[in-house]
Length: 379
Image 1 (cartoon, one colour):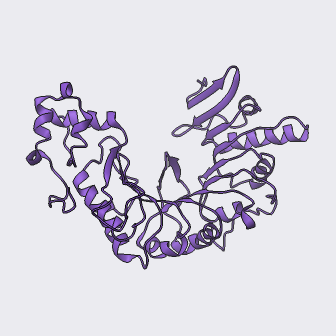
Image 2 (cartoon, helix red, strand yellow):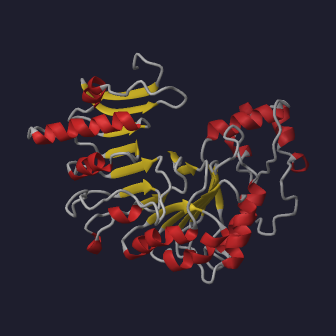
Image 3 (tube, one colour):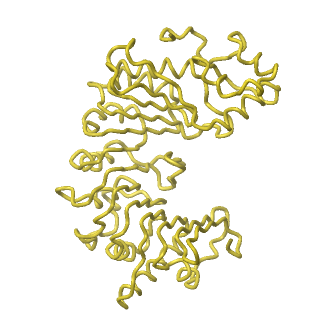
């Protein structure tokens, strides 16, 4: 651990630093002008860098440039998560030009830019740079700079941030302030459509739903997130507003402001929503996820347009989290809506783990679904 008030982590292979992550959230940034720390981090063995300090990122760029100027072995970073250096983009561009090993890149904390307030010049980003870039996450104005004609950069996964404070939390982006309109996203979506991108994560709105068929035709996986529109609203809108169904096989929808401590396991309601989407907007989907806690799957060889041929099965993502929440609910410590489907939740417990409280909890009359209607698709 660093001897400073920071949350940090290291992963070492022998005596070589392989992975470094650091968060300065809530603290005055003590890394400013700390070139010693930058040189400690900036070693040729480093592969993953995840920091939220723009000043430290700037100093690591300088370390890379000095190594390059001295014709020494540069940084071999393959995964980069940093704040966008709005004040001095040239150092970032030099770093990208000198780091061909980069596969994954996330640029966060990008200030809003409009036609009257354009981004700094990216002309110095060489066409031959980033030859191995497969995944990029940033705001819409930045994205077009990382695509090249004829797929000379093999970008396959794109995550669109829709806020200058967007930060990745797993595969979800948390938006503190929505800044970009659908119209401002269109240039990026045009680039995505013309490229070989297979996975796209982007913010959801009713306007986004209307343009999805135009830009999502070549995608295999689509993830939508929102801090404003609940899942029920999005499912209903997607099932009725699309001019044509999407061809994606994997679909995810997350609400970003949900309670991370309580699982979203109203399986009866989720099954209804999955069946509605599969019969309208997502006829080719074999995996649908509407909460962090449950993934719904069906066999790829099924006739996806026949509701009786491809039964959907719920797969719980985190058994420990869900079991702990159900145990606490059975003892009266917490309370939340849940419902079991085909005994999926009950099957998480071994027979010797079943208490009287849990048995009572799994009685049909004891379960509380946010949608109390009988599931018409239950088998």
